[in-house]
Image (cartoon, rainbow, N blue to C red; front, top):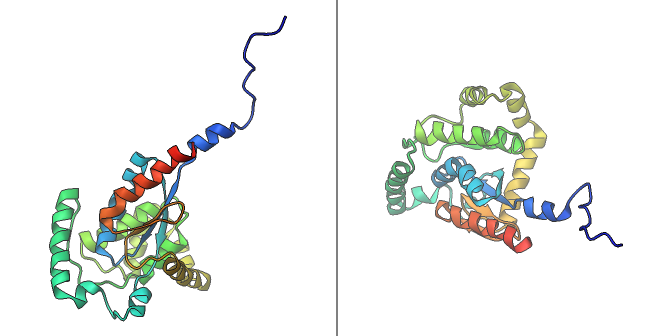
Length: 225
């Protein structure tokens, strides 16, 4: 008599469950001198969890991209009306999100050191905490993020190995790698920050597109399932 019981599930890796459990990765391209990157950085991890996606932290520098467009500084400085609107908008949005806000001086700040540290640490478990700490120091407290002693203090506060992180940030290899990241951003079509790139290459620009990008990436799970 044939066994009427269904066959036992095979042991080992379940390919179907792997496909269902795999989370899409959204690349979060941000510039520490960018006001709206501050807003996204403070919210993105919580929102990404809500949408079932993971974040790849991609710090980069907008300065080289702006220079190719003929801009020697931030467009918010070049166009006074635009700058005035942006600062008022930041006040409103920070109040809405419950974030501290202080206009830094000068603006934009020299974000090179912070970018080098974050770029070298983009795969470290403390990258999110470090990124948020820098943005809070800059736009929440108005501190100078080009100050290496401040960076060391922030690294220690989040439990990161400050001496090692700074040494790696200053290495020739990391400096070259950060420049390559700027080139990569240009190839992706990035022209401002924050920008979000979802699987497949679709680009979303601006803090007001954060949730749209995460939702689009989250929907890819249903498509692949």
